[in-house]
Image 1 (spheres, helix red, strand yellow):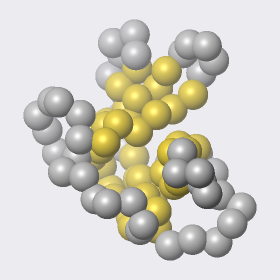
Image 2 (cartoon, one colour):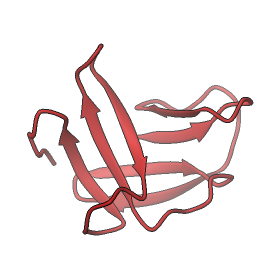
Image 3 (cartoon, one colour):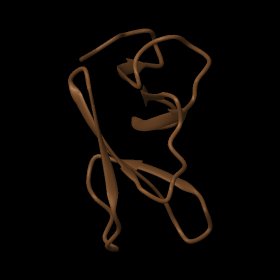
Image 4 (tube, one colour):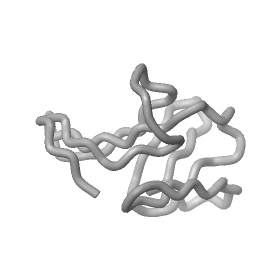
Length: 83
C-alpha cells in the first residue's frame, strides 16, 4: 500500500506506486506493508481502512484516536477486521 501527496497536497492511498519518482519510508504491520512518502511528517500511528462507499477503496488515517501499534491491520468500514 502506498501513501503520498500530490502537488496540491491531497493524500493518495493506492495499492500501486505513483508514476512520479519519490522516496518512501517502509512500515511493516500485521499482514500489510505501507510505503509512505518521506515528505509526509510521520504520525504516531497509521490505520488503513477499506471503505465501500461510494466505491471500494482504501484510506490511511493519520494518528486515529485508537490504541495499537504503529500500523494496524486493514479494518473494513463495516466492522470486518482482516489481515
